[in-house]
Amino acid sequence: MKTEGDAFMVAFSSPSAAVKFAIRVQLELLNADWAEEVFQHEDSAIEYDKDGTLIFRGYRVRIGIHSGQPRCEPDPITGRIDYFGPMGMSNYIHNSSLNKHI
Picture 1 (cartoon, rainbow, N blue to C red):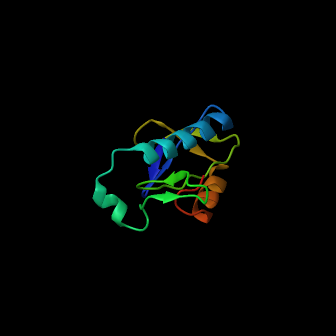
Picture 2 (cartoon, rainbow, N blue to C red; picture 1 turned 90 degrees about the vertical axis):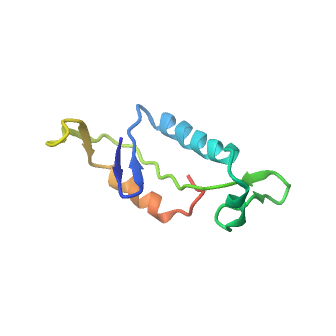
C-alpha cells in the first residue's frame, strides 16, 4: 500500500479480494457511527433508493479497481516494495467515477 495525495493504492492477491475489500469499505462507511452533523451535508446525507432501502449514510468514497501484473521494485528511500505498471488504469477508473462508486 502507498498513498498518492488523498488516495491509497493497495495491492491484493486477486481481483476478487480487491472487490471484497471495496464492498467492505463501503459497508463500513454506511454503518459507521457518524455524528448527526455529518448528515447535514449533501455529500454525506442519508439516502434511500426508490424502494426505501438505505443506500448511503455518511461519508462516501470512490474506489477504482484494475487487475494486472505489476513490476515490483524496492523504494530507494524506504526499502519497501513499490508497484509500477497497470495501476494507472485503476487511477483513471477511480477518477472517472463519482463518490460512493466502486
